[in-house]
Each structure stands twice: as C-alpha cells, then as structure tokens.
Image 1 (tube, rainbow, N blue to C red):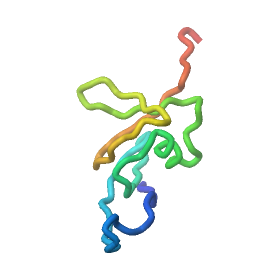
Image 2: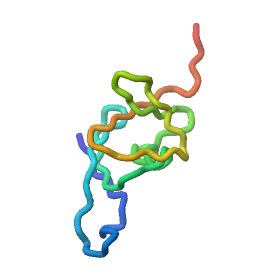
Image 3: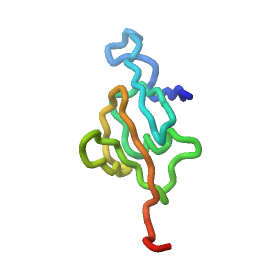
Length: 95
C-alpha cells in the first residue's frame, strides 16, 4: 500500500513548474510518497491517518546503528527508503 502525499505547492523554485523529486518512505511499514526535501517531526506525524499522537514516539530506523528519536521540531532530510516506526512514549516494566 502506498499513500500519495502532496507536500509542496506544485511548482519548482525556479518557476518552471518542473516536477519535484518524489521520495518513498515508510512509517510503521506503511509506504508514503512525499515531494518535499525535508519534513519536520510534526509533518511526518501528520502523514499518518489518524496522525501519530503524543502517546507515541517517532523513530528513524538507522541500519547498523542506534535508531534516532524524532522530536516534533526536528528536521529530517528525505531520501528514498527512509523508514520510521512508532513506539509507546512510556513503557511500564512488569505490567
């Protein structure tokens, strides 16, 4: 499943109307297509329906490294294959 998400104004910076690059990303294994070079954590959270709430944290998958928590104001440079996942904000061990 791929969700087409228009996240730009429809024309290029040079005014030619040239098509912007599209990036294929995943959030919780759902595919999204975005057309913006960068998105904030808040914008990434709003791509999902319903939007990701404050009770869940958003992480960028870092292959071979430590996954990076994405805060609302963090700016993430888009690239094809970028993957994100959510997890509960608070985990109660032993419950």
